[in-house]
Structures are given as C-alpha cells and as structure tokens.
Image (tube, rainbow, N blue to C red):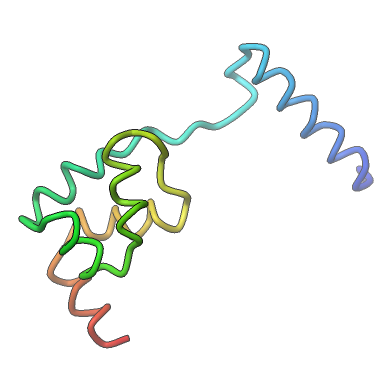
Length: 94
C-alpha cells in the first residue's frame, strides 16, 4: 500500500513530466466555447451573468479565452448548453 508521501511524490513526478512536455501523464479538459453557449441563449454577457448567477468578469474572461472555467463552472455551462430554460427554472427555485 502506498503511503501519502509516495502518492504525493508520484503526483509531483507527473506534474514535472507534464511541464516538460509529456502530455501522456495528465488529463486536460477540452476548451469550452462559453461565447457560443451564451449566444444560443440570446442573452448579453450581463444578462447571462445575472440569469445563471455567474460573475460577469468570469464570463468575460472565459469568452476572451483569458481563463477556462473550473470544474463546477464547466458542469453548469454544459447544463446550460443542453437545456438553458431548464437550468433557468432550477436556478429560479433556489
């Protein structure tokens, strides 16, 4: 059984290999086209932000490819892409 130290050391080795160009030792999330998702909803950035309770600055950063959404935001955005009205209804209940 591996100790916590051994698991951390293996993770660091993977990170170093990835930084050195070895893409086989990591998983990369495919880039998300947030602007395309928003355009389907026919909302402005401000409306999209308010409707789905997302920070306006984050929406702008994602659309301008300065940052990619984290795992939670990616999940919400995927749900919006699949059913924007359904997600709006759920959020309205919260």
